[in-house]
Image (spheres, rainbow, N blue to C red):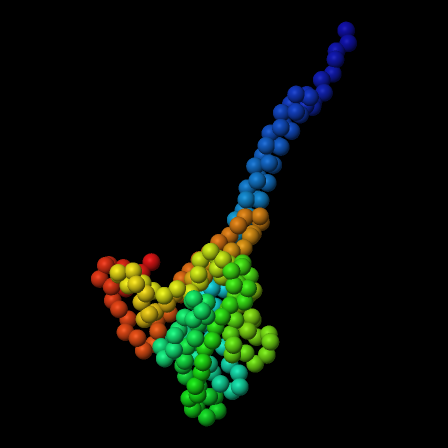
Length: 215
């Protein structure tokens, strides 16, 4: 009597089940990978905006213009209150300060005049009247060409501080930075506020527990 030989292998049902399980695992791994890539891109974009804001803050406060004409130029922290600091309905900064000559070490007068390019749009950026060519203005006060004033259309980037009674406190003003970009199709925003005390004015200490700074 002839015997049938058994052959090893998988049945069609087993192959189908294996394929379904493999597909589910592959989809989960792919989803986790794509999610990690998106998260990385968002993190990098946020970090770039944060670094750009720090760079802009340091330039505004300490060097409103790059060194040129053999002079180290000062920033807003050295600006005095001899003139109206915020002009044009708080769309321009005008301050007087002192610059340092490199060779002689003597002091020279400096006027900081800062306004905006494309005010009210997402491309808004600082501009300076103190420029020796047509290019350094945007490079110096627009680090990385990031939209660090992207919220200027809805929120004024320059505002006076407020006293406890709600009136303007001209001893300091704020520069509001609101960066906005898109990474992997996800909108990314990052905001900071620069506090600029006006040199020559007494800083008022508030007694409402806010550490002297209004919101």
